[in-house]
Length: 213
Image 1 (cartoon, rainbow, N blue to C red):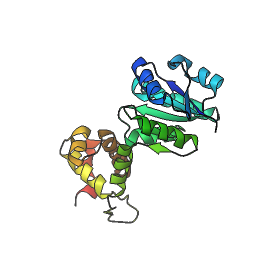
Image 2 (tube, rainbow, N blue to C red; image 1 turned 180 degrees about the horizontal axis):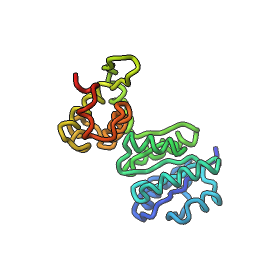
Image 3 (cartoon, one colour; image 1 turned 45 degrees about the vertical axis):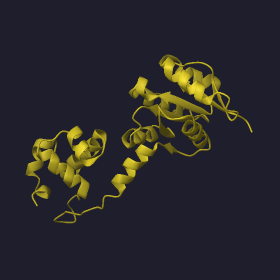
Image 4 (cartoon, rainbow, N blue to C red; image 1 turned 90 degrees about the vertical axis):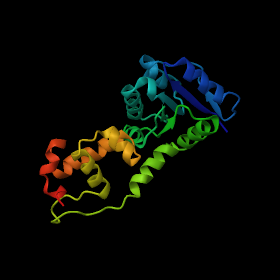
């Protein structure tokens, strides 16, 4: 069986050395032996045509997502995985929207790294356990319709809970700690709340009739 070729885009020498050590002597995977900084990511992908591109999202920040998006736009047989120190469900969603195949902890062990590479090479998606747990936690929250009329937008029970905390002046980070979710997840909920209630910010939440009950 042909080996899976992997290209790691990172300016971080320590991360490159760590990934190289994890993939060393693995007959099913070959890491292209060069550390790729941001200016050479796309040209190197075009030249090497790796099966899997690992992008260091911690070091590159939003540029990492742009690399993934640009690689997807090339319509090459290259699958992209984001490596990040905090592979949350929010970050996973952004990776998938950009055409990537998943998000993986940059601190993962060799087994998870190899498995993730194999899975996305086969055309499937990969997510860390934490990201999946956060997403499932959200899915387990039952929807509580609180509309007075069918034409009015419905807030879920979680959205009403978050709106209540916001009305009390709590920040996204504080709400996240109380509910056991990330502050980015709280931010996403807040955006949905403002959209459904047709308000422009927290200070207008108290005036919404949907939050008076």
